Image (cartoon, rainbow, N blue to C red; front, top):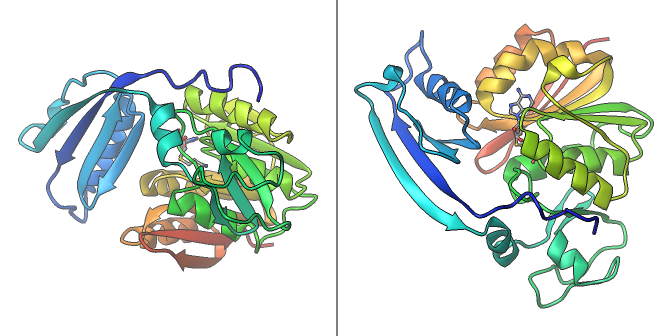
Length: 295
Ligand code: SAH
């Protein structure tokens, strides 16, 4: 494990702020508006619990005037050692051709060995591509349905020898997967500096080549044969045209992060942006969308 690989997880309290805005109207999508406010206020994560929006912050938040009259609640979760929590709960996850192994389990065993008895899987199929991940504070341990769905979707799109971009790389998991599938070039971006640091460490630990930059689609130079984007519904809608423009004609987009309830909005936005051949793959709660830029 490279030096500093675990340095990003400092025990700090978390402020959970939940807001229940009025139901969505045709002209205003309040949950999306609140989510956008939360990101702007510096949220580390924003989750939509069926219309109640929860933001997780590293510091107390001043409630914006726009939320006046809405149900707002704050709960402070005492400092916990996130790495310890991740270790205690983390298991290896199989998705598509990949086996995503938490780094502490990988450390306990040699390459290809079963970590047995420590929460690992019983057997490791020789055909699996093994991604070792230290989630640190960044999203994307492979446990989330959206991440697993994107890894599985990589089975159905051409990657070897192609130029691939990963927008919102988090832990770097999808970018690492693309590199392991012999992509010609993989570029990963994330707006969160912690994610960039964690992704860089994970990329090094997996001994693959990925260029990681802090930013969004705006910092992606050039056109790509494939784009991975596991983001929130609102971001996918906002970025639909940019995602289209990142692709060469005939290129593919694998997008996730839209709940089943909201995936139609993503499909509409991608269609409006000019993407075609849009395939929705529903999971339990979330959908993966595969689309193509017409030739
Ligand atoms: N790709 C990983 C992580 C997904 S979580 C996986 O599939 O598991 C989404 C990530 O996108 C977060 O790390 C967040 O910081 C980042 N993000 C959100 N909006 C973004 C944007 N507009 N541009 C780039 N990154 C973004």
